[in-house]
Image (cartoon, rainbow, N blue to C red; front, side, top):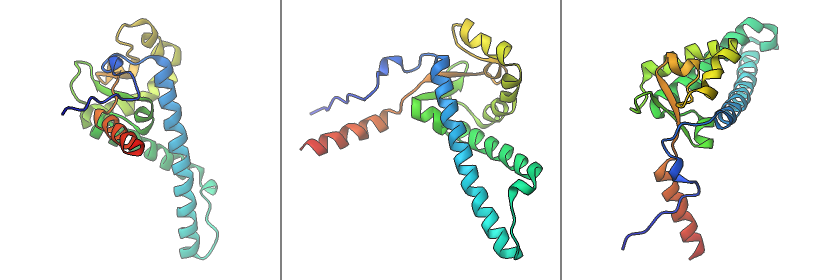
Length: 171
């Protein structure tokens, strides 16, 4: 007997280029996640350093160190998951995946390049994100430079596990 899996989301969109609102939503999730985790890690580091050094240590007393640490954390937070799975946490939440422009899986070299050139898109906001609205493939400046495309891509395995969990709850 074959079980037909009905995922919670429309799989008909899978593989289609993601729109600006969905991409912005994923970005907001990523910003919140990065800042919350950085704040928690900073509090732990401050506590440990204060205990080891015997006096109060605060990252706010060293803003350059804090800014560099945040930039490194942002880079690692984005580049590693993009290289491994083609998505950050925010992208996973809204069902997006980064692929190469030809549709093949993303690799570490392209993930690093994409994260490094993303600030260009922020710096030249109107010019950089205009292609996202005007192009059929909805690729912004950083996507064009890093040879990437953002598509809808829900994890079929996760959908199956949700289905099985719902099924076992109802029996």
